[in-house]
Structures are given as structure tokens and as C-alpha cells.
Image 1 (cartoon, rainbow over the protein chains, first blue to last red):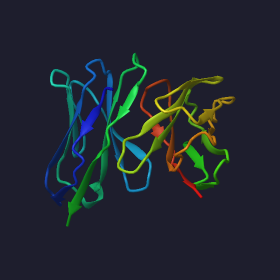
Image 2 (image 1 turned 180 degrees about the vertical axis):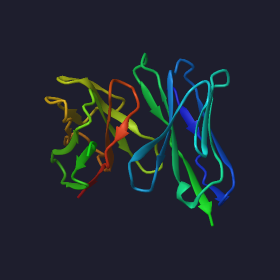
Image 3 (image 1 turned 45 degrees about the vertical axis):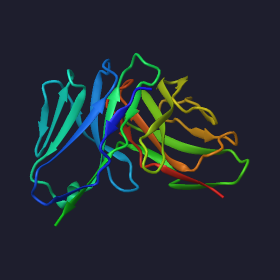
Length: 111
Length: 112
């Protein structure tokens, strides 16, 4: 079975620091990628789509490396409110298991 | 407000009982999805629907059933055949199949 793998963490990071997550995927035919954040006992909320050219939204930057089959998320100047679990998602519409969620990386921002 | 809603927030099921989880969206999205999440696990796809009156099985459809009679609604029934139904159930929708998905607040199902 094709997988999406993430370091489960937790990552304990002081407020203001920069933190980076990687997510590897084994299905080279995956077409679309996303990062979601999920707060404890809540639904996932879209953080960013991920494009080959990279994309940035404020303090957040996402990158896709197709050659090495990983996507990354960089959070600069981390805030206490960034504490959450970050889920990586890969989609391959041509497979039976079309959408694969990673198990998530837990981030704790420390005051 | 546009959005996706799920009810109830918590649901208790007795052994041998079927229960139905509600999912409604007013985003005019064609595609809708049901996932289950177990503690420490990624989301797993149960069923999805790309358009009204059509749906397909996901990775873990056994013990579940769905209907899509209206664009706005995609209810999930957890049947007595699902032997381990305790989980967090999440409904999502997207403007078209496999585009960016937006999630409802979820329903926690517990077995008594």
C-alpha cells in the first residue's frame, strides 16, 4: 500500500523560532498535495496547497520536491497559536486509494 | 454563512444498532466525502460522492452505507456489521472531485 509518512513528533519549539516539517510519499504518480492543521478534537482545516514552484502565505512556506518525493512546510516566527497537528495529504486520482493522509506531526510552541 | 455541518456532535450506539450521521453543505459543492479518524491515525476514506445520485466505496467501506439524493446532503449509516465503529467521523466537500476539501466539525461515535 502506498503511504504518506510524517514524523509524529511532538516537536517542542520556543515561540519565535522557525520550524520545518517534511512529509514523504511513496506514490510517484501523486498529483496534488496539501497541508492541513488539526487542533485537538477538531476537524482538519486547510493550511496550504503545495505546488512544485513552492508557495508562501505569510509565515508559512510549502515546497514540493517531486524528484525526492517529499513535501515540506516551514513556519517562521512561530506563535503559540501554531500549536496543532499538521497533516500532509497526497492525491492520485488514478488509483483506488485516491487520497492518503499522513498521521500528522504534533507541534507544541513553548512560551 | 456558507459551510459544512455535521450532526450530532456525539452519538452513542448500542450493540446491533444502525445509526446515521448527518452531513449537510451549502457551498454548492459537487463532491462529498466521509472519513474516519482513530486516535493517532491518519484519516481513512469510507465513501465518496462525485455528484448527486452517485457514490463510490473508499478504502474502508465495509459496514457502512451512504446515499446522495440531494447535492447538499450525504448521510452516512454505520451498520451493525461494522464491528469497531468507535471513531471520529469527518465529512468533507469540494467544489469538484479531489479538489481542495473542506471539513465539517465531525461526529464522535461511541459504542455502549
